Image (cartoon, rainbow, N blue to C red; front, side, top):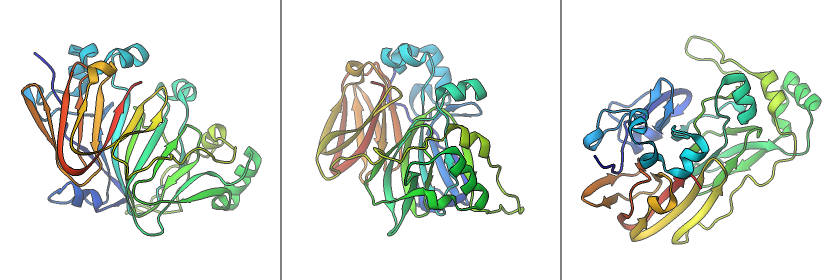
Length: 325
C-alpha cells in the first residue's frame, strides 16, 4: 500500500503560561483552558501522534515507520538518525512569559537522560506590540557570575531582551539561555526531545499554590556563557519563493511564500518533508490521486517516497518546509 500526505491528531498541552490564541486559530470548541502548546507531530513516549486521514487512519506514526522506514523517513534521515522520526513539531501560544530555561546538547542528554538533546528554531506567527524574547547573555558571562545572579534574583540583568515582530525567526542552539515572552504565538521545530532545564520561573504558583521544579545546577553546567550572537535569522518575509531559515545536522527549514502554485519533491530530497501552514490561507495538497487540505495553523507530513507534491492556494500562502539535509 502506497504512502500519502499524512495528517495527525494534535496533542494539546495546557500550560501555566498558556493563552487563547491556539483555541481561536484552530477553532477548538469547547476551548481548552490555558492552551500553551499543540504538538503537531511527535514520537515522544506517551505523546505519539496518531494519523487521522487515509488508509492508515488510527495508526501511530511510530507504527507506520516500523512498516515503511525508508519510504516514510528517507535515506538521509535513516542514515543519520535510524528508524525514528527525529523531530518534534509544535505551535506555541504564550499569554505570559515562559520560564527562563536551557536545553542540553546530545552528549549531555544521552548521558543523563538517554535522549536526544534539543536544537530548535522559532518562527513568530504573531507578536503583540512590545513583545520580547529572552535570548542569551547581553555580555560575556561565567559560571560564578551566573550563579550569583540566580541567588540574588538579578538574573534578568544579565540576559539579552530581544524585541520581536510577526515574521521574525530565531535559532536556539543547546546551551542558549532563553524564554518566550508573553503575547507571542509561534511555530517551533526541534529535535525529538522534551528535556528542559528551568532556572527561573518568576516565582509563580499553580492553582494549588505549587511552584514548578527548577534545575539550577543543570543549567549552570550546560549554559553557553558567551555574549549571544547569530540567533536572529536574516531573511525577507515579503519575498515570494523559498528562503532558507536554518540548516544544521538536525533539520533544514525553509520559508516558502507562494501565489497559486508550488511543487515539492521529497523523493529528490531523500527526506520526509513537514509543512506547517503559518499563513492565513487554505492550501490544497495534491499528489497522484490523493488530496489533503491544509488549513492555517495545521501541519502535514509528506513521506520521502512522494515524487511531485503540488500545493495550490490563493494569494499569499506561507509555509515552513522542514526536512533533513
